Amino acid sequence: MSAIRRKNAFAERFEQVTGRAVIQMNFAESATLARGRAGLATLQEERKFEGGFIFCSSDVLAHGVLIEARARGLRVPQEIAVMGFADQEFAADVEPAITTIRVDRDAFGHAAADAILLRLAGRAVERSAINLGFEIVRRASA
Image (cartoon, rainbow, N blue to C red; front, side, top):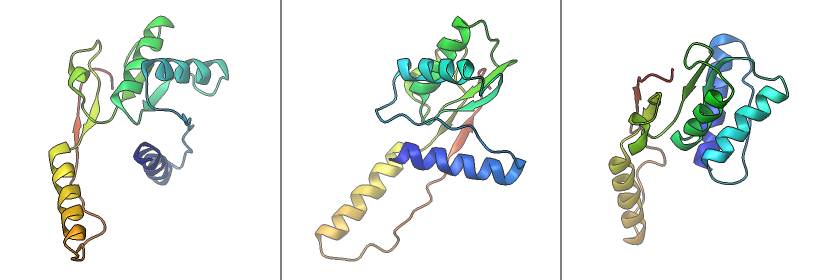
């Protein structure tokens, strides 16, 4: 669910800024390397994507896209730039290293636990949304 919200928010903002619609792809199941590979393959085979930028809702999908790009002879980031989400442990160690969005997972966990504990104590949660920020980690894939 959160991956779909990330994708939708990215697409909405991208279109606002550039005036161009984002080609979108959804997966009903969880992110895997195979789904990242299949996603790029499908986009290329349907001629929806000939190069440019791909934002993935997870580093796992981004890694799959990078594997498929290499298999297809696409140069990263010259012909295809790829960005992931979450700055998972492996993201810095794959080739090319994945440009990604880092969030403070500990802060997310603490905020969620605090909200649940307040609810269990019968107290109102002050805010329904908390902005915990993010950081773009620039690496070789974009």
